[in-house]
Length: 162
Image (cartoon, rainbow, N blue to C red; front, side, top):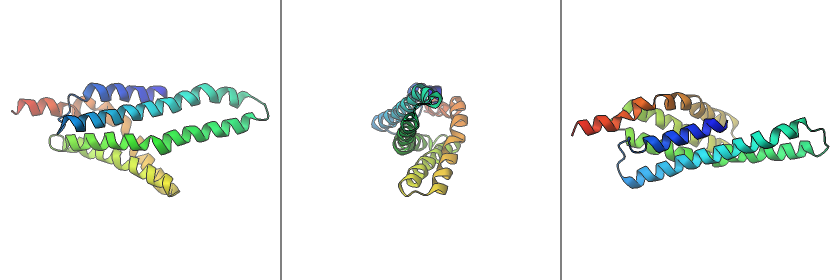
């Protein structure tokens, strides 16, 4: 899971200069939000990877309570805190790509909607909304990252049209 978060952070930083942002402040806000998303996720993954296996294997009476606390902490990071910067990043990229890459703008818009649905589902304890948000966010996200070479060409194509 740690790699699931660190790879996108590297990509977010690399392509930030290749997307046709409307302003440097929107570029910087989206980039900071994207890095924050990856950092929050990596912290949760690191906590889970380091602490959970010994607790699962332990037969100590208190290990079950500690494991439950650990699970709730990671859940808080992943489903309460993480959607906010993710949504800001995905929404910012969607807005930046809207003129030159309409298809990828729509895909990033879908990711942003997924982040909003996860947060709304959590706040109002609406499990179907939460699940819909996770589906809209987590299923297309790796595929969208894998196509970065296509959606970040919008900057190059934009520069050649001037």
